[in-house]
Length: 275
Image 1: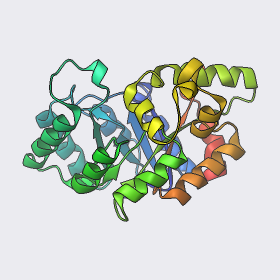
Image 2: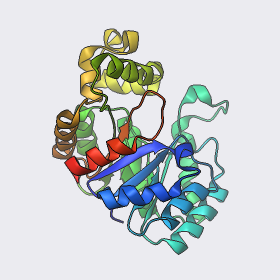
Image 3: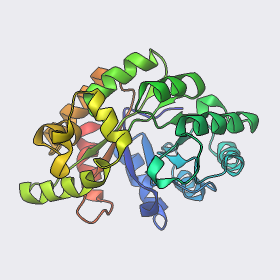
């Protein structure tokens, strides 16, 4: 499976009525389109995007194991793999504990879910895990193609590579902003970070990297936001290069916008600069 060096990450619902736009990403040189926001177990949108392209890899980033039955997901995986061999990566993860009512611990749930996928014949090489902490990073290396970290700076990529060792996939998501107006850019960034800096899996990961509660207040300190979210083409190019130098195999960019829409002009700009 070829992910390429750079891809695009965006919410799955943005592609429901426009799968043909994925061909533009392919033509711009992006290797993979990542579908966030917990795609459903039928994976119909992923299939439509693959049908609309010829070389682009499509990955889920990620399917929520609390919301999707493993048996249905495995059936969907095999349907897609039969049509588009080596162009689909099944990213799964335990999402956020506060959003789930089940008693089972997230790590235990991931392990049992992987057991179900194994029993249904989904190959380890065809799946990846959302992973931040060392325990799940190690699990991703042992039982999948590798790890797909989210909302993490370059320092995390370096540590993640050390945990994974050589070989397993490391494909971090990086949110970016191309809005030239500083005030508008700051509003876009803080609108995005306001949620994630309230989620303990992300803040605990950032604490392991040396950040503190002061960095999480008011949408994030300048130091933290500078490390997490590059602004402007030059900074984005430099940050992607830094993630690769730290051990990333593939970096997927989430373009932040004021209204959460797809920014096709931004994709063109980034494609020219990066691919």
